[in-house]
Image (cartoon, rainbow, N blue to C red; front, side, top):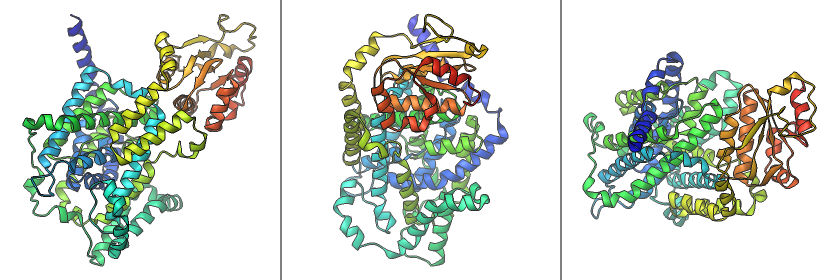
Length: 567
């Protein structure tokens, strides 16, 4: 009976019914946002297809599958899926392992079978309801992983940037760096350098000429770079060079998964699935912070599973929820999955109607776009704080970064998490002993703190959240869940007197919570912080970011601060 109830509950959670119902809530805004994001996604999809070594058209098919299928079944209403830098880099690493016979030609059936199987694994993971554990990933692991991906993207595009064939792995790029410089095709630089300059200077241009704000920088770079190559008839590599003899029918090729080789494919498929969970749900957390909503992790995993199965069948690059496209979707007014679906349909229309134009895009132009993507992926939140990081967090960050670049993404993440867990066993034991939520009380509850005098009727609108023990990667989610139980109209004092220690994840988690509340015009104050904890906040610039005014020495001062009209 329990099993039946469990599956009934799972099916109810994974059902796309809520997504379908929401499609009519913001039709005009979602259509505009979807078309805009589709145009932004075009150069990125082509570029990630290139970096995956499956080809630019495969990048488009991945974006189409992610947009339509991922949007319909996903758990983040404003999420937009498609190929991402981590997923493209990961499948590229496997392409060197799967080639046809003694040739150097990639085994496409193997690649798309792995992508299909990774989608199937994601569906099974969603039924197991374990996706929410992503919230317990230590921040140094995430930062090291993102910085590693940024370095990989930049290095792998060096050859394309100077008009040479892309190397298959980082080691080849580094070993042959001098040859790359000596063999550079100068004509390719006529395209790549102006494209890169446009990408870097576009914020300045758009702030000066307001109409340019409506035009995506990657699309502008794509048009300018392609125009330069066509006007001067440059002898450089083009996307069309990898589309030779592709007919309209071949664009719709179906790749039947070769399940007879499942044992051979299962390890890469599991790695892709694990990366999809990490990549997608981190993007969903970014969306949650912006919108104030909360995504369904299990349904998002299910949606990515369906999208990857579709991508594998139609010859698309493996997909995940993409942070940049998701943020752009929110910015342009997208509120329901209709925006993601329209984004996918826009790319499908481009693929069917403008295939000949896509073929004329220079590879050097896509390399410039990916260069900028690689630079943007680097974690600029942690990089300025390297010399201030606690030793444990610094070791985790550096280890994950190094292993990501030189070995494997998933191995790097696994090593980072294992190290974090082993170095925090004492803190983890204390969390398991205290299974309840952190306590929150109304400020007028005398069990909380005796001796407080209340002079304002507004005091009844103040609740106190009083966490205890260590605030670290294993307990931040517990803090957030408890905070979300406090009535939304209430102001909050976070009483830190019982916090024993804090790590980077705890500092950043609390900082994000307060900044989100500030964006929602909700007053949140931290009180009774120990000097050692305050030093950690100060070293990591958290106090600077949330504002010194949000920090109080005592509960009495915090109450006065909240009731102050100037706060």
